[in-house]
Amino acid sequence: MNPVEYLYVIHTAEILKDTPRHCETSQGRIESVAEHSWRVSLMALLLRREFPELDIDRVVAMSIIHDLGESFTGDIPTFVKTDSDRKTEDDLLDRWVAGLPGELSEELSSLYAELKGQQTPESRLCKALDKLEALIQHNESPLESWSENEYELNKRYAFDTVAFSEWLTELRETILAETLKKLGEQQ
Image 1 (cartoon, rainbow, N blue to C red):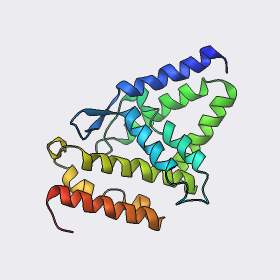
Image 2: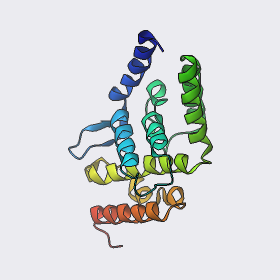
Image 3: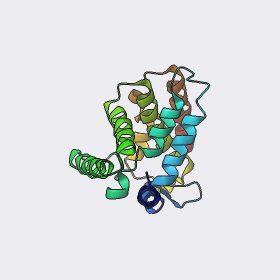
Image 4: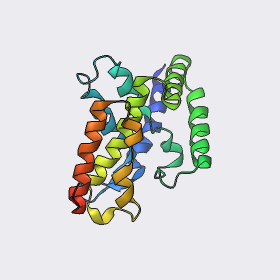
């Protein structure tokens, strides 16, 4: 990859810094997709000792790129994202990845295929962390920033995604306890 090709990738990724997500930060500022992806990546990195059998570097790589397609479509909250929205995002991302230099295109295509297939422990961990980060961020954001449907969604979301891991299930339960505390409810 030459410097011009490298900068093309970096300039595309920069769009995520200005792509707002549906959630606010703890200080009430709209979060960007890049901030979300950064924290999912950090979450993966910090789990190296909890999941020593996994290729955590691969999980971190998937975490870094998992929402890169949103640089073309923007962020659409999971509870309103349609199959058509997913297809549009996938098609635009696939076209962009196919246009990258050979080895980079192959590497990213492989990561996206693995993530989409959800057949490896690494891809399942990445998907779980993506969902858990969103829940954590909601718990950190001002309650008045939550949409009406999120009060119930945040109580049940992602339990199925973490079911493959006892440790992640315990983390999800801990996040639920934070949610209930924020809502002033008992567990």
